[in-house]
Image (cartoon, rainbow, N blue to C red; front, side, top):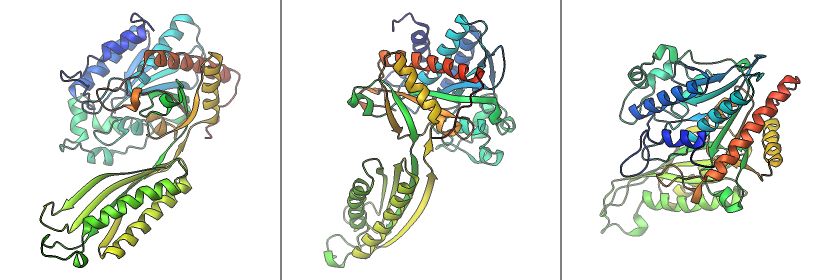
Amino acid sequence: MNAASPLRADFDALAEFGKLPQGGWSRPAFGAEDRRAHDWFCRRATDAGLSVRTDGMGNVIARLEGSRGGPAIAIGSHLDTVLAGGAFDGAIGVLIGLDVARNIRRGEPDWPVPIEVIAFRDEEGRFGAFTGSLAMTGKLLSEEIGRRRDVDGLLLIDALRAAALDPDAAARAGRDATAFAAYLEVHIEQGSVLERAGVGLGVVSSIVGQERLSIRFTGAADHAGTTPMDMRRDAFAAAARFSDRFREMVVSEGEGVARGTIGIVKVNPNQGNVVPQEVRLGLEIRDISALRLKRLGELTGALAEDVGKALGVDVSLRSVYSSPPIGMSETLRKMLEDAARSLGLDSLDMPCGANHDAGIMAALTPAAMLLVPSEGGRSHCPEEHTGWTHIEAAAHVLERTVRDIAGRMLEGDGLAASA
């Protein structure tokens, strides 16, 4: 792809919003740079001949009407970033959608079915992940909107007002399933599977489910120099033994698919001359199998209890978050694979280890995802990068798939939502 292409020009223009002098991009949801990015997208979509509206949650919906009406083929992702993140995550999904709609409008004045390009708000979770797509699926009620706040205590309702949005309207942003025929999303992989395989496109089979647990080991604080080793109730020793065995358990029982991560460790008292009295661990397990995910969660609890008994510390376990695996539409997956093949491109059938707006929209309409490689597996950092050859290929595959979906709709064929 050359620098003069509309898609590349869009990417370069969008990358000016939230660009940091020290490197990286920061467009936190509903912040000034995020608002500027969404305003720019509105103008760019209008220039492409699409009608544009913003719903109550601030999701921007750019629409190409179809001459025969009916439900829309939706393409979407997000424009917000993590702090000091990268320029590709989310952004390419929105921009490829815009490019597809623009190309079709320019080339087919009698295009039959509607296309909607959606820039969702707050996918990255400043106010809790998937705020925009949850609102569009009707799963974000006014009570929750009133409770959500960011890490600095800013309420979502105040952020909405600062963005000239009405919090009451945000709770009414839900849309009916009949509005959509399908939802498609292109996203960077955020891992290195595609790069290692030497394949430029990944067709997502399912989005992994998650179990997040908080485990507390409670022993006794004692003097580090005077308390014999065999008389200690060392909470950190228990946490360390558990952590090592937790990894071994995920490897041995996860069938090469499950992922287990301990990302939070809090020690109290956190002093070099005191035996730790309490250690809190925050961990998560991810898997594409609901049954295996449940079993791994049960094994995790049993492992913690066994370690606690062995080392004489008390154990408590609490579930923090749980979400089931989300299957992508078999019909849409096959259409993406066929489109890639017709263009002479290889694709890899693969699970997605992170949830995306597609996982939320799948509750409303058949959904599918196309992944492109992340160089070095990097994501959510300034070094995040995807080669333009891969982005261009994904854009061609998505456009071919949109045309194929439209053809099936005109023939009266349904799109199965099964995984």
